[in-house]
Length: 334
Image (tube, rainbow, N blue to C red; front, side, top):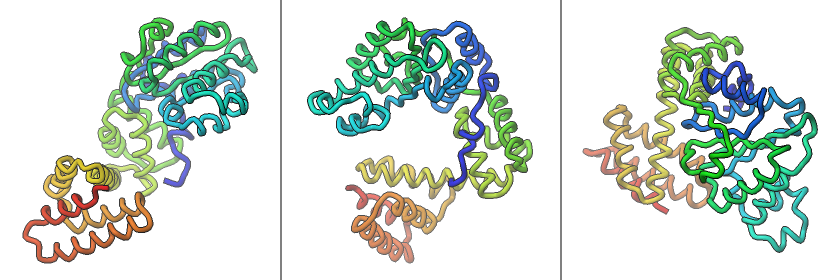
């Protein structure tokens, strides 16, 4: 998808958040700033809601709103943390040389909280995907929250609030961002496609909303994918486009399972594609090669093409397509 993402170009304002209770709580925090714990399932709109809140409360959100994805930061190496342009300005060469990765991340939290707001009386730090934060970092965060509570508001977004230690949970007002209802998702989709000037019908929006299963981000991206593929968001267009997308995702998951040696999972997906979805063996093989080209290069990719060629020849007279495709999956293990 090369065009700008509709999830970004049509990011909601605070008043546009579809879940009434979450919208009410975030609007209340505009009047009475406090630390917030925003929790709910994947795709419910937690990050988008916090960004909308920051736009509302800060005259200069680019300066006074800091967004840290815990999953991203904690997966960085020590060198990557030290050289990250977001943090390098307050990590000197001595600290970079002598500190552990844990010390650097703790320092980043403290320095981020200690800066004076550029506008207004406080700044906001969002810690997204906070369920991935180790307990020792949570203890460090608790101390930072205690020390800088006057000038720094922390917003912690997570799918799993129980993963946070009680001292952090007790310092935050809970905001439940439940999955949007089907009707709420359809309403959001209608606003987005109307703003885009995209041809659509009610059945198409209903289908996309059902496909997303309560994941608002997935719904908007599915509508964009359908429009870019077909030039409209109708029932027929959405059905054809999104079934193809699901097949692509399924094949990628199958290849990943095969790589990791989870052959039972890989063969289960293969059965779903061949039996439940009605795909032919040639179609699955073609999609598998497409996935391989996006994942591999050099000798690894050449080897997969060689194995696929052998499988293609075997399929010519195959009595059981599943056996030959399963054999190919078994040989993908690294």
